[in-house]
Length: 466
Image (cartoon, rainbow, N blue to C red; front, side):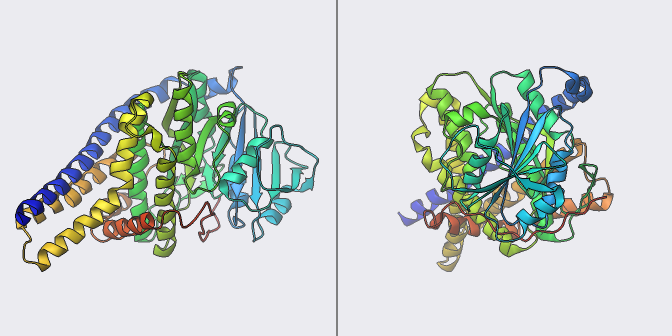
């Protein structure tokens, strides 16, 4: 009896990792096909032509900032240098305790102004609004601390254009990133939201609003995140978008129709997963209203971000991401397995529930199960071999394949030594890092409900520019 139960558990664990990694393999195939189409499309439509068209849509760029004294000037400069016919930049200082506000005042010659919001959402009190005497398109709003979602909602109320772009204050955009992403809204009237790629800039150098030198970061913990981002953005989200299953638009770089976001009440406060939650709410709203719509991902518009360079900060970041994932999924549990919501309810949400939110729980259980079998003398060598093959080796092959997609990008690792090191990192991530990462996410799952929507803490490095 006990042997049958243990055998059944072993079979379920192996089946789980087979399905999970098979999806990743399919994702790499679909992403490669989609990127081939994208390259042909990139060559057929000139960005200069788009700049000269009269039917572009103006964009409000919203930049929530908390504790960004070291990076805020370089980031805002990259936003101001964007190649786009008409846009405004609204920086919202969410009660930073450092010199973020003063850095903005000094860098852009800010003075107080009487500008009032164009719409009203419930937010924390505003302490002051500033405009630049040199740059008319720049506005800075200073407010009491309320979290990232609250800061974004303040930005929404001061925005004046039909599209808004939500970006992180520690990120940089390629000069043509906004134009490439906004093109989607010109070509598709059904589009309500679109996301772009987020790539790691650690080791890169900016020149004239874009990363021109991309080299592998110095530390292994940074390199393994390069592998993760390639797998998540270049393979995962490209595939979900192609299949009409996209649930996540990164908070670091997303473009939305402002009217649709205002209709659903803006960003949800009290969660660390406000980006995914908003996308789920848009899916839910559109399907309940029976409105035709699309939510897409475009791999070409690139946002560059700094990643954590030590284990402590990375662990805190992944803790927030796991809690944010669960909070977003739980807020919309009505949609789980619900045919009313089409492929989102029947495919996308079950996938995220079973193979994203529950993945660390199942993986930690799998490791614990093997240890328990070993201690009781019941460990089967065939099970161990298959588990390692499916959970580690198969995953490594998929990661290496995902990295090959990176060569399609306009800016990629060109030095042979960087490519070799990246390959070795992909091979090594499954031995130590993966188990640590699963444990961090497992602990975060156990802490659900204990923490609310707080800003994450990350040590910033001043961005190198030329």
